[in-house]
Length: 310
Image (tube, rainbow, N blue to C red):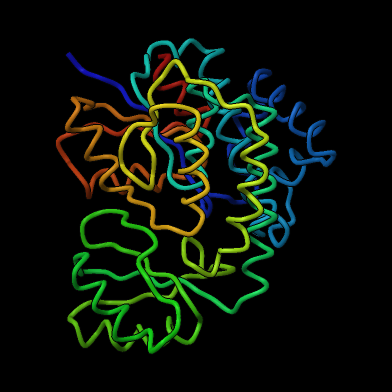
């Protein structure tokens, strides 16, 4: 018998107008945005639907925007009866998406989750502005080779793996100059390196100041054992209680995201049907590279919901 897991996207999935047709056709989705506007004291819905892109793409705003959009799509799925059909046995989210998973799995309330995400975005943007960092995607190298690339290119500066996305795709993060050196070093190790257009060195030691600030907020956030298991990015294991959530979310800011291992853990536990809920199709694409034997379906538009309902 098939087992279903729901996965949620992280930062980078944002774009102006994302999931617009869901917003326009689902009252449940609009209610989520209305609540978010009240909590943030800002018109997040207008920013998501109309931009400007320069503001939406900032870390400070893209993180709450993706969180709220993903939650809105999920509530639209619930209103249409599709969420119940998916009958989620487990959830996971890529980096920021882990907060979406924790909320919808019942560990953190929407209000607290949004406040956490907004603070996380603010702190990570501040840390990025306080350092000169970047990220590079390494293609065609395993973890051991990627570690050697980082060691050769660092030259005393910060540079380390940040995202283990799928076989043959690992993102490294660190100081800008070390990232630039990594482009040539990767070639020397038989890999291809592509610089990423990001604001800073996320999931690296350069995010240290954000870790400290987020920890204070996490300690004052109510977290309760959820109804649905959630896999943690940092350990690729299931959360076993509220304190493990606090510790992992703190560590996640400056430590690597083990997305491939997280998905492989779910597959090993019998999950063979995955639903990506939220803007973009990044996770569906990664799933095909991690394991083609499982099914991955994307829900990011009203049309995707109509296909299921038909």
